[in-house]
View 1: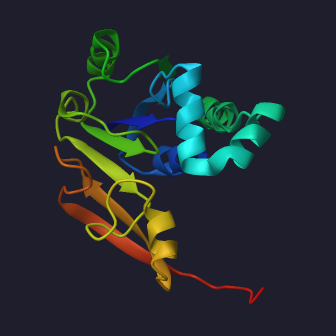
View 2: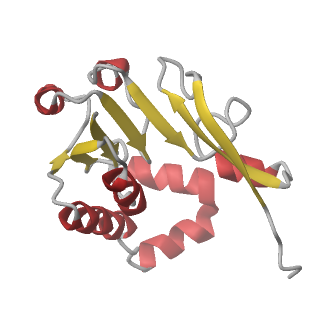
Length: 187
């Protein structure tokens, strides 16, 4: 089975696991480099004040943030290289040139890990559709960030869901689920 992985990065463990599965040909890894919508400086400033307040926003302006996206993309590149899997960087999965590139892989199945919402024009390209590796207990915790809401709601465990991708966010048929118990250190 030819599989293509779509991610923003941080997929090194997923690549390692998929590459070792019998009968799976991980035919390519696509990394979307534009991880958030383009916003002007003023829009970013207003958004930061809205969500983080004035003090935190001022702190962001003073210190330079770490580039966590680049670090996780590097781990993804390294894992792909270890297994000889081609990696393709695209700025936007939904751009026509990206869709054309995805079609050239001729994948049977898409695996989606750690991306923004993927539209049907992309997730339906593989013959069998795509599976999303969702960090939340669907259907109760859909969208993002599900783990935050599980913690906020005082759950004793967080969920992990693998499901087929459908037009509505995190509503496709569930392939498998697991829950991981939360253990607090008492601090």
